[in-house]
Amino acid sequence: MAQFAVRSLLLSLLLVSPALASPGIAKLNSSSPLFGIEFPPFNTAVAVTGCDSKLAAAEAAVGEQKQPASPSPSLKLHMNRRTTSAGGTRKESLLDLANKDAVRIETMHRRAARSGGDRTPGSSSPRRALSERMVATVESGVAVGSGEYLMDVYVGTPPRRFRMIMDTGSDLNWLQCAPCLDCFEQLGPVFDPAASSSYRNVTCGDQRCGLVAPPPEAAPRACRRPGEDSCPYYYWYGDQSNTTGDLALESFTVNLTAPGASRRVDGVVFGCGHWNRGLFHGAAGLLGLGRGPLSFASQLRAVYGHTFSYCLVEHGSDVASKVVFGEDDALSLAAAHPQLNYTAFAPASSPADTFYYVKLKGVLVGGELLNISSDTWDVGSEGGSGGTIIDSGTTLSYFVEPAYQVIRQAFIDRMSRSYPLVPDFPVLSPCYNVSGVERPEVPELSLLFADGAVWDFPAENYFIRLEDGIMCLAVLGTPRTGMSIIGNFQQQNFHVVYDLHNNRLGFAPRRCAEV
Image 1 (cartoon, one colour):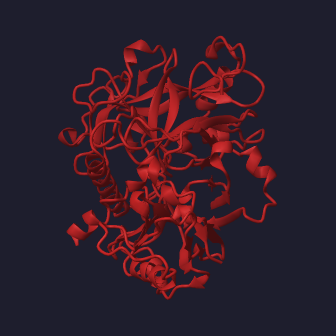
Image 2 (cartoon, rainbow, N blue to C red):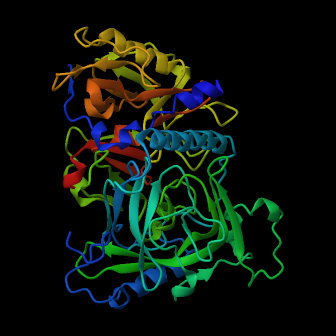
Image 3 (cartoon, rainbow, N blue to C red):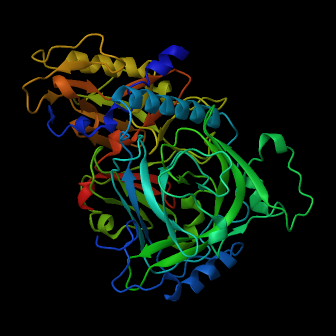
């Protein structure tokens, strides 16, 4: 089974090549001087805009039980897609990327086995709300080399740009930090705390220190001077992927779309990593968007409220799109659009509070509901097994056995016989020879949720058009004890909304490069 799991992931990142975009498949039935931050014209300094005092006041009110005095704001950030690295052969890149995805899924299964529990100290409701919208952009990067999407974030005082992996499947925000005692190679310099006037360590006596695990060799954590000693942390992603360093507070500079200049958000908790290992492929660190209290999304609820959304550009695209923290005006205007759908998140008592679980009821192929037992989609009572999550860091979509075999066979049975089946193609199946066919016709694929919501996907979101006229189903299987995952390939060109206030996931088709 272990060998099968590894093989099932070997091509999970084939789609990272621009050649893998599939525009030709039909279904049957800014000028800113700092890239990543959209500064208003003639902006001269982020620290003299008048908003910092509001944000500082919001941070000072951590324990207050207040309702927002004004509509929730929005934060918009740049995001770039990581694709194949510039160096090395395609085979080497595929093996490297497949290994990373395999480690990721293994880690997610291990995390899901832990108790969810409420780890958030104090209230999780917004402490204050500002009227500005804050926004970030999303692009498809071509120089770094992996399957995730990247966000440009400006950190410290003065603000410096860092490219961080956007990950809805983890919580901790972290950067590689000087002195870098054991670090992976990244593009650009690492973050230097000594060069930032706003950096300060979280002390070991701070209650936030209890939200992270100490390094293994430091357990149990020694805290001799609670008000002075730093808080060491250890955060793992897999057998060889982890970050270790000091938990700290720093200013993150962001753009506000309301009239005025860019602002900074003070006191963001992040990990300053001095020992970092793993397959992070040139990124500066990771920006966690999971449900846990330390994630970027959770920490900024005081500023933007309980909603964030993103719109993922096509794999291989070099055009920017946006991640929005807060209510998105463009989507709100389309609220009456018949293609805007919502489905409820699974209850907050899910075994892993990091992940965004949804309640899947069934899968439709060619408009027909497949014969898959309903208990296939259930979360295991012992925790760590079953259930379905939506994840920005996993590339393809995965369905547990035996659901995957039923889905795979359904496409084989319904596919036109004019497309010869390609036998023994590595990992992906089924695959077809569609040489000379500009727009191959494929059966429709839809997900049916327990509350009746239906997510219909365009063909290019579940079939990959490869070179040599081969086209493959971009869906793989996981063991019966695993979880099903809606990956980022199926999410491309959808505006995906995480509405935590109403406990629901929204999705609407959009051309993300035009957002």
